[in-house]
Length: 239
Image (tube, rainbow, N blue to C red; front, side, top):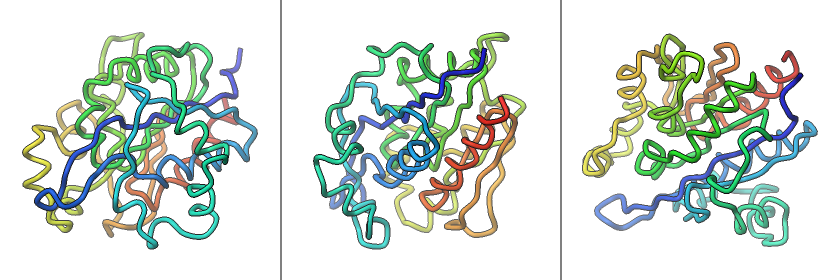
């Protein structure tokens, strides 16, 4: 039986300060909004959930370079389908993993804090994989893979696979590595190495780039959220 045409976009519940406490990181809005739009247009029922049912919007993701046009209109409209689902999210633990054929981990820097121990979200991702569905992430979303397993083997899901995600070079370019290190979390490239995955990236840190490895689809940065979601749909259609 084919996996359900229903997708879960995971949202980080964490928030933290960057740039010496001057800015707040949380959900990078477009990393959830872009896949929501792509998957909805492709006929998926799309749900949003975080570990705690809450979220904080990332400051950078609200700047005009990242949020404009129709995206901005959707974000500003608290009655839009996206905002209603985001503002009334369930806790991941209250969902039935068997209902989903796609798991897509959106992010924001804050995902480095809560995703590694987000056991309810990780359980859903593991079950989607076990049921033959598609598991995806973008930017810092691979932090979720710290606890996502291939239930058939008990091994980390990404072991022996190829992924991408936010580059360490980009963290340094942004000048926030000291802040990130204070959280005690592994960067995406480091996590890939720790879990036995191969990490690939585009030549440019802001290039639109994604990797498809079977039913695993990963995107490098915010600019990759749409192309990653489109690849998810393409892979799903082959199942």
